[in-house]
Length: 303
Image (cartoon, rainbow, N blue to C red; front, side, top):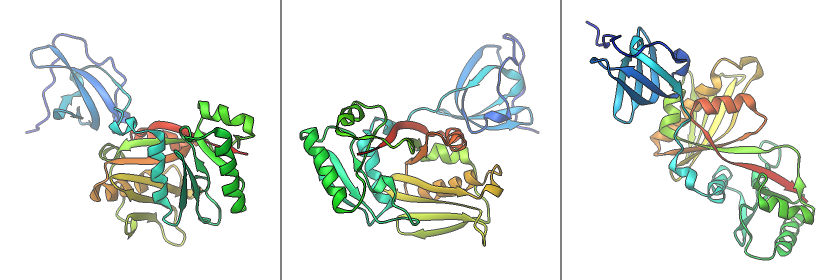
């Protein structure tokens, strides 16, 4: 005999909702009928839809509902992680874990950062002044220090700020203006929720671990999809996700993320973070499906 609940169609009308297999992996609220005809609500992540039933992973545990008993329902935004109360400055400090060779010099609450080329080029995140708050000294002096620091390295001075922040406006009179590209959202998600939404990877994934880092690759000669993760305490940084253009729209990016998240969870990670450029619409859609929420938006100023 099946363990699926028998539908109860007494009372409120059912079937007027926009739910279906497409909400699997999303957080939803579902109103459904009880055996006595009363309606009740369930809030949680939809983990399955088919064979006449849907399963919801709620705070009270898994709930199985007969689809015929659903009165109404809709997807709802992911619940914000408690880590969203962490300042943008403190979140961005985890960038240092991506490059063990990065050097940093404090400038009040700012941080002057320098790192060697990665993948043949200098990365902005590792070669800019992290400025998410007042520098605790006159702004003119801070600007002079930034310019001196990067002039000594033979680099153009860059300052990383929160996009459209008061500090961005305050730096404009000193000649620091947006580069015009590279604005990026910093997004966070609970590792457990993102992993649940990503599902399983594939058996042919190749994992390479080295200390606090992990590289996942699919394919060999050539590699068709890859990504990297680095652990910093219980924060898991996801970066350099790449899928060969001829293999896109096959779910490989999500499979790579699933493997990286699974590795991170096995190492004790609780919060995943990443940077995604604001015009990367495909990436933003993927991360939204996995429960990532924008914490802040970064902008680079050149002066």
